Image (cartoon, rainbow, N blue to C red):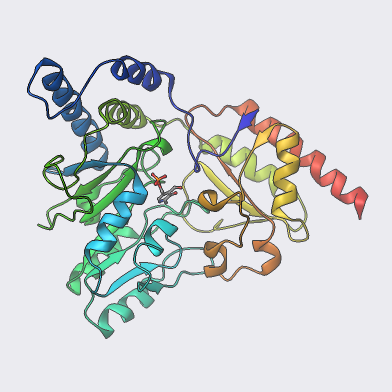
Length: 360
Ligand code: PLP
């Protein structure tokens, strides 16, 4: 099976699996005072430094949690009752966390419309602006620095879901003016169910879970020591990302030879691991099934809701035609993708499109 669905989840790196296996065999509670407890504390603090290094901020406050869904909910719910602006292409973990959030439109290329954001900010006092760094469906890189500057100019704080950016582009939390940054370990080759909320200099510490005083009283619950250590190691390894640029060029040049095929966000800055394309007339579900039968695991883009194939809210926000939205396929690569994987997926694509022609 060729795995090209890294934006849904990346395969666990073997080094991370080995480390976690070793740690899971020990009774490690980072709040205990005995030797095991002190060992656990050291492990958690080492991982905190490894994850902090990814954020590029001089004094980041890293709060470990269960993943980006929790991180996004923690920030968005902290501002409940106040005005929040979020881009129309945010992950549901942002959009559904605070349903009263107002949506910032995007251009047809899938880039947040900064003029619209400024008009919205001018119209009424806003507490929080939430814009992701890289969209999970299209891979389009958002103008986070400019958006954060606008938010700050109008007295709002800035949250950035950087799940799909981490390990692909520098996060530059301070330079970009990000107050709250959410990360997830399993998109980086770390374990599922672990993530972090990183807080900059804004002076606010949102907390969703209350109870024990773990994680500087910002996230109650016994720390998942093995998972956190795995996240730390994955974050460190992600600091040297593979060159996926060449693979993307090969993939997109070949795909573009198919008549009528559209690559979404092609004219916008994009990360090199993600290609979302549509072939009007085809159906995502049947394309995915055909790829699956031939041994390639891909997605229709909206990874977290795939299984229940629904029209993508991202493509709708980009004003895509219904025939494009209905036929979208996402290829996303990562640390273990090879040229052979790309050649094979292109062979399968040729086979599928040949079969479609003979059916017409
Ligand atoms: N934000 C983005 C942009 C994502 O792509 C995802 C997962 O697909 C999430 C948040 C949710 O992350 P997690 O699985 O850690 O809850």
